[in-house]
Length: 372
Ligand SMILES: *Cc1c(COP(=O)(O)O)cnc(C)c1O
Image (tube, rainbow, N blue to C red; front, side):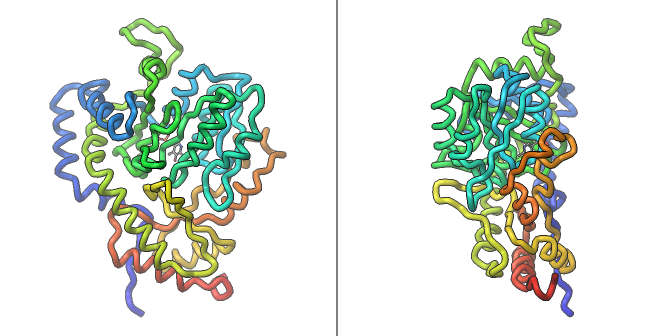
């Protein structure tokens, strides 16, 4: 038997090795500056990332969950309000709504895609609905024109959850600029990741930007004057400096992810594995490469034996989590089927050709009858 490579799901150490001199330089600059919170690195990053996304304002915050919460707070959404969220998303989208005292209302994805279905969305609107949080899951935007049209018809706020989609475009416009405001996360594994926790709010609404600027810092615009019951949710100088370095590489890295996705799309030919669809008006940044198969657990185990490390995003949908007992009687059949069938193959900007080929060859060798 020839030795085959072990393919990690995401090798962050390898990613950072390529730019370690830049990262270390930026880090020392902060250390020597004596300025560690709300300083020049944050200000510069906010300008650079706002410009990158095509919005007027970026506010660095502590993480993606807080970015969502701060926006809901800024829009005054709270008890008695309903917020439409995908039935299949990372739990943070739902938690942000619940933590503001509002009620998350699930909307199933469009058939064949992973994102919120605009026509089902319209059916879920009630007199209590205040906002929609479309998630650009796995790096591909939701169908934003249709979602924004529904929102406008009913006077609803659209807050993008752009945690997985830094750099993705919809009809050529960047994710983060497609609704009234957006929340993003720079968790290390995201396409643009810090070396710790971080997140941001994006918007071209000056009033909401000013509100979030206060809410993230104890509800204060002037030191020791507190106009709002705010949070302490700031993005520190070290993380802002790391993000400035990494933002300069983001487009190159997203192109490298596209290359892996193209390779998988061209060469994976196993009839029991469904590949992700890519509508022509959306450019995915391939945060994850998610395939579907009714033999998911067998495929995952087979790939693991062959050295290919996969993950499941996500194995339990939010309405089935213990923290949501009130949803026990509610069914989201599409989200439940996805949780049982999705598998995320390794994808990153630093995969070698040998690793990509090994993944494809293993997926194509899988036979549900033989490897069950
Ligand atoms: C990662 C993520 C978040 C939360 O980000 P954190 O920085 O971990 O709080 C929110 N929504 C989605 C879709 C995510 O993938």
